[in-house]
Length: 112
Length: 113
Image 1 (spheres, each protein chain N blue to C red):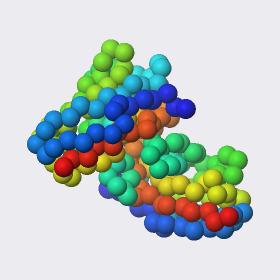
Image 2 (image 1 turned 135 degrees about the vertical axis):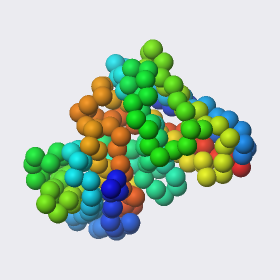
Image 3 (image 1 turned 45 degrees about the vertical axis):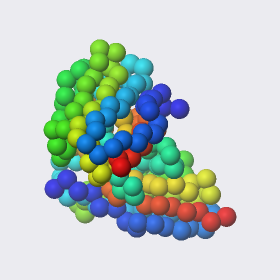
Image 4 (image 1 turned 180 degrees about the horizontal axis):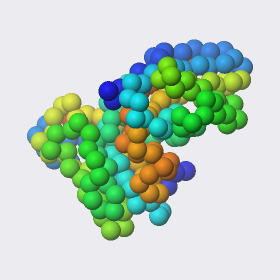
């Protein structure tokens, strides 16, 4: 199966809080799991990515948690800021960073 | 700034017409992929080009076609436009075929009326 299921569809978090977005996949051949951030009128920009040989990767305020047995991965945004308000997409690929299969997106709003 | 540029930014076409969208890859990148992003949805993979050859295609009909040129710039052509083709079309370039980050352009917003 090629689907990547993302939840929630929308999320509202207070400034300083933790934003958590979840994704699930079915294809066990997937070996690259990136998260993209997209602002209105812009193309997606890579935030952080993980491969299945590790269970967690942290870059600044952004952390990916990966559960290979459950076929799930999540994005945690610590100390969320109004500037983080955007649409976030998880994705997966079995061919390096190519031919990405995207989730449906999560519209994140950080209230000041 | 990713260095991937797409033109035009916006485009309005009539159903049944043909359209060509253009993408200039980031310098040195030999791999380009095209995605269609419908409103409120995630991008969907259309096809990929590597060194001027098509290298994989998603679930899109043959009226979606592409080209990659020797300088690695690329075109997406869509024939016989349908209303459902209205979307943001994204181009992404990568340094090479495997295990490298994909950089997206800002997209071309196509509206079919």
